[in-house]
Length: 139
Length: 238
Image 1 (cartoon, each protein chain N blue to C red):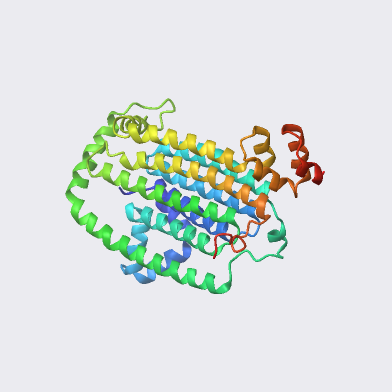
Image 2: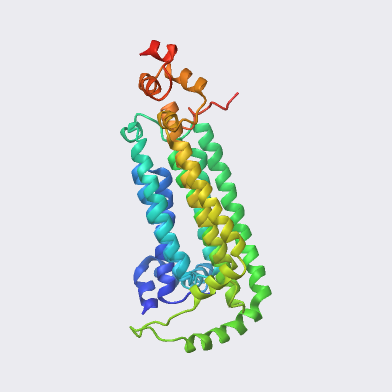
C-alpha cells in the first residue's frame, strides 16, 4: 500500500528508476523508503544551518531570537534521534538524550523570557529593534 | 532504527515541512509571519519526535514552545512592532557583504556536516551491526507483550515511564537546578522590563539617578514630588 503511494507520488522518479536500473538512483530511492538515523541527523543539520544563517543575516532582533530557537530545536532533534538509536542497539533504558532534550527546552524558555525582556527594555530606551543600530557597546 | 511503510511517508512529509517552515521563518518580511512559520516548524519537529517514539518530549515541545514561548514572542512582536519592515521601507537583511560571507560560511558548514554524517554513520553501522540485529529480535517480542490500547490499533508503550525514571534517578540534581534557573529568569525578566516610573514607585533607585532622569521626563518628576520630599530641581522642571 505505502509502496504504491510512493510510486504514485513520483511518476518522474519511477521513469528514472526504469531507465537507471540498479544504478545509484535506485539505491538512493531504496534508502529514501527506509529513513534511518542518518536522515534524522541530516534534517537536524539543515535546521541548524538555517538557524545559523538567520542569526547571521537578519537585522530584526526578534527574528534572531527565533533563529536561536530553531538552532536549539535542531539540537533536540539530534539528541532524540541518537537516544532512539542507542535504544535500538539493545539498551532500552538509554533515555539520556530525551532527558537532555527536556533541559534544552527549559533553557530555551528561560533564554526567551530574558531575551525578550532585554528587547523590551532596549526598545523603550533606544526605539529600535535593528541590530546594526544597537551599538552602545561598540567602541 | 529504520522507519518503514507509513512511518517513512510521514517522516518525509514532516521533515520537508520543518525545513521549508524554517526557511520561511528566516526569510519572511513580516515578523508575525516569521513567528507563525516557526510555530509550524516546531510542530513538524514534534511530529518527528513522535516518529522517534519520544511522545513525552513531543508533548513538552508543543506545550512549552508553541503554547508558551511563541505566545511570548507574539506579544513582544506586537509591543515593539515597527511596521517599516513589512512596508518594505527597511531592509530585512544585513549589508550584502555580510550576507554573502555568512551564506558562504553556511554552505561550507552544511557540506562539512553532510559529509561527516555520511562517513560517521557508515562507521556506526559497521560497529553496531550485530548489536542492532540482536536487539531487533528482542524488541519485536517485547512489543508483542505490551498491552493493547482501547482502539485496538496500537499498543501502550512505556517510553514516558522510562523518561520519568531516568529524569528522577539520574537527573534529579540538574532538575532542581533547572527550577532555580527558571526562577532567576522570572525575576530577571520582570526587573529588565519594568520602567523607570515603576522603579521610582518601589523606591529602590538612587535619588541622584531619579533627579537626573526627572529633568527630561515630566511625568517622572510629578511622581517624584508626590513620593519624595519637595525638591527644588523637580519643582523647577514642573
